[in-house]
Image 1 (cartoon, rainbow, N blue to C red):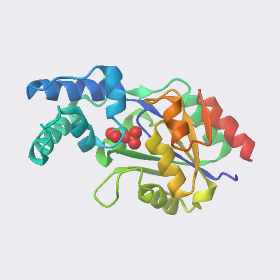
Image 2: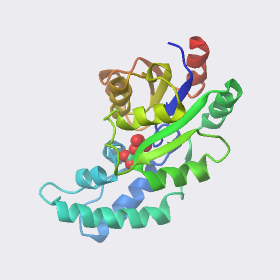
Image 3: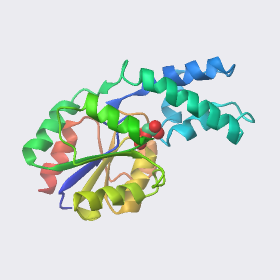
Length: 220
Ligand SMILES: O=C(O)COP(=O)(O)O
């Protein structure tokens, strides 16, 4: 493929946000008298947006639409206070982003995280790098794996989907990339196992951020 731009997933790909998300989720669940989830289980709950996180985290039969909305409201309120306690870029991400800037590659972030938190995280935790587009979930687009957001980001960057490398850590990301006609590169340091990425159509995998640069050098 030729590659003119990279779209990154955020949680589990650029940033390790798992602890802040799980601590906040569990605090809200406990306050409402519901069972909590170990960190290692939370990695399977995150990825489809915050409403879906609440729905999956509630015990069977408890998640009525009203309850989900109320708990989601509390989660968003609490996350606003706790989003940056432990969250940080994964090791190797700063060097990889520096490398992309040296190559003059356009870059974007597309997350299922609520748009305002996606922008907050990018502004504070990835402040040293320029992103052409930073987009989280908002009402005008469907959540990934719908290709809608990815296609909108491509249009905003002025690049054809087939010229875009899409980098993510979940099957949802790999499906999104495939549906949008982008090249799906799966990363193995994030929230989900290799088998999920392969099953969802990852065309390449990398165990460290340097592999993203090597992949791009291979397409030049
Ligand atoms: O579902 C989330 O909140 C995180 O989503 P992301 O993996 O698309 O960044």
